[in-house]
Length: 340
Image (cartoon, rainbow, N blue to C red; front, side, top):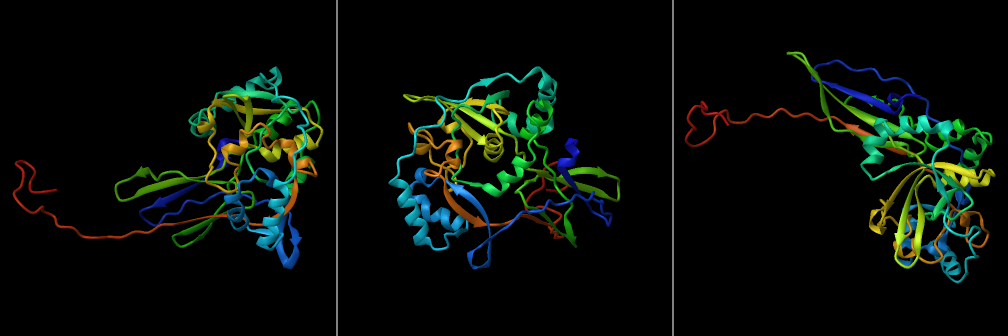
């Protein structure tokens, strides 16, 4: 799959020409029926590591459907605060190493790609590594979608297939064709796969017609890790992106993954700590931090269902013709002819 398949390009002619977009299929979204006929996604939440001020914000922001009552959700959180997480399944942080020779060239091609240069390199990504899954990986997110993990497990490459593992760890997203209605367009994704819009640019100008265009790009979803050196706690390896894929590999009995790696301090991990769905630094860098394997533990993983939603990106093109004075007020500057 080429990088162009990650982009839907929208052309805007200051005339009446329209650019046709290639059709892309939107994948099916597996749904679970929650109580009260609300469609929900079943998953596990690590409530033990959630701070109190985030509890109600998460309940309403994530649109929790099981449990449906805010009080019941708060009670689950209080119960989780009273439990002691078991000792980590693995001792010490995960071991990192170079990519195997079988995919080294593909790694170089990935680092030369537009997506890496524009998204990851600018965010501080230093390279690609192989990561062993028999070590501790700190997870930043409260909840995982178990149905999505099941789908990923069913698509795992066979053991020893380095090429298949590379594609699994660094998937190329797709943006489908929009629904157009006049000057309004709508894109939809069932996996929050839309990254956003690029700035408008001039595509061409031919005297009586100027064509403007912009790209709607896919949201990169590559496995990404950050090595954080914390005073007094040593190094921790934080999952910056790819929790579901790493969990699927772990559940599928795989022992390694490929990932992008960067090094940084606590303030350089690139997480939205204002989001109630993201653990706060005091939890991520605690002596017993939330780990990838905690979702699989009956003590730490609390069953929670959240509202099933699709991502929508809608854009509208508005134009306005106005008239302004052709001559500025006051004395004209020499040689300007009285213009602005």
